[in-house]
Length: 127
Image 1 (tube, rainbow, N blue to C red):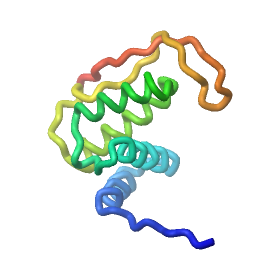
Image 2: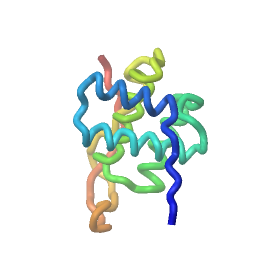
Image 3: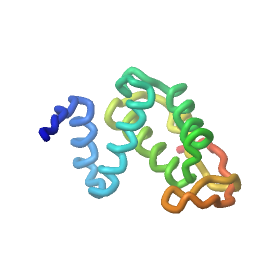
């Protein structure tokens, strides 16, 4: 069985370079890339064609449809913030991309499938 290797897009290569320049940990780089790939696949479009409304819609999808834990949503949000602020140099105010903060709502533990009680809400993070 032969596998097809997809070429790295210029946007992905630039994000990788930006993460390396900033000396992000290998695990962080891997997690951020996975999140951005999932984001692009969700919308069937390149992230550079998407904006703030797509980020908000994706965060709602992660929390309401996928029911991911607050920490998983925070990783996705961090990856999106990095992509748009650093790699794509979008001039959005930092507080326009919300960060998920744990307060109290039910979500499924991604490893066990067990329900956990927490409360989650989005807050804007100012500079």
